Image 1: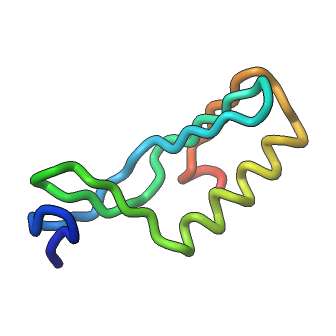
Image 2 (image 1 turned 45 degrees about the vertical axis):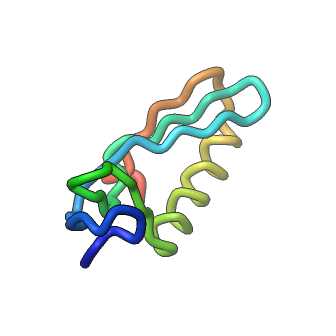
Length: 75
Protein backbone atom coordinates (compact mmCIF):
# COMPACT_ATOMS: atom_id res chain seq x y z
CA UNK A 1 0.00 0.00 0.00
CA UNK A 2 1.25 3.49 -0.81
CA UNK A 3 1.12 6.62 1.36
CA UNK A 4 -1.65 9.04 0.38
CA UNK A 5 0.69 12.01 0.87
CA UNK A 6 4.05 11.00 -0.61
CA UNK A 7 3.37 7.58 -2.21
CA UNK A 8 5.98 5.91 0.04
CA UNK A 9 5.57 2.38 1.38
CA UNK A 10 3.24 1.85 4.38
CA UNK A 11 4.44 -0.62 7.04
CA UNK A 12 2.97 -1.87 10.33
CA UNK A 13 4.42 -0.03 13.32
CA UNK A 14 3.63 1.29 16.80
CA UNK A 15 3.37 4.83 18.08
CA UNK A 16 2.72 6.87 21.21
CA UNK A 17 -0.74 8.49 21.46
CA UNK A 18 -0.97 11.52 23.77
CA UNK A 19 -4.07 13.44 24.80
CA UNK A 20 -4.54 16.34 27.23
CA UNK A 21 -7.82 16.51 29.15
CA UNK A 22 -8.20 19.55 31.39
CA UNK A 23 -5.06 19.53 33.58
CA UNK A 24 -4.19 15.88 32.97
CA UNK A 25 -2.10 14.20 30.28
CA UNK A 26 -2.72 10.61 29.17
CA UNK A 27 0.07 8.86 27.26
CA UNK A 28 -0.69 5.54 25.60
CA UNK A 29 2.39 3.74 24.31
CA UNK A 30 2.78 0.82 21.88
CA UNK A 31 -0.33 1.79 19.89
CA UNK A 32 -0.52 -0.27 16.67
CA UNK A 33 -0.52 1.84 13.53
CA UNK A 34 0.60 1.99 9.94
CA UNK A 35 3.54 4.29 9.17
CA UNK A 36 4.96 5.61 5.92
CA UNK A 37 8.63 4.67 5.60
CA UNK A 38 9.32 7.80 3.58
CA UNK A 39 7.48 10.71 5.27
CA UNK A 40 6.63 9.15 8.64
CA UNK A 41 2.87 9.82 8.40
CA UNK A 42 0.99 7.73 10.97
CA UNK A 43 -2.45 6.21 10.41
CA UNK A 44 -4.45 4.58 13.21
CA UNK A 45 -7.37 2.30 12.29
CA UNK A 46 -10.93 2.92 13.44
CA UNK A 47 -10.85 -0.27 15.52
CA UNK A 48 -7.70 0.85 17.37
CA UNK A 49 -9.20 4.33 17.94
CA UNK A 50 -12.28 2.73 19.55
CA UNK A 51 -9.98 0.89 21.97
CA UNK A 52 -8.02 4.10 22.63
CA UNK A 53 -11.30 5.89 23.46
CA UNK A 54 -12.12 3.11 25.93
CA UNK A 55 -8.67 3.35 27.54
CA UNK A 56 -9.05 7.14 27.85
CA UNK A 57 -12.50 6.82 29.45
CA UNK A 58 -11.12 4.39 32.05
CA UNK A 59 -8.08 6.63 32.69
CA UNK A 60 -10.35 9.67 33.19
CA UNK A 61 -12.04 7.85 36.08
CA UNK A 62 -8.66 7.43 37.79
CA UNK A 63 -7.59 10.96 36.81
CA UNK A 64 -4.07 11.76 37.78
CA UNK A 65 -1.92 14.55 36.40
CA UNK A 66 -0.05 12.17 34.10
CA UNK A 67 -1.02 8.62 33.15
CA UNK A 68 1.20 6.39 31.01
CA UNK A 69 -0.63 3.32 29.74
CA UNK A 70 0.67 0.43 27.62
CA UNK A 71 -1.84 -0.27 24.83
CA UNK A 72 -0.83 -3.93 24.59
CA UNK A 73 -1.65 -4.48 28.27
CA UNK A 74 -4.90 -2.45 28.23
CA UNK A 75 -6.68 -3.14 24.95
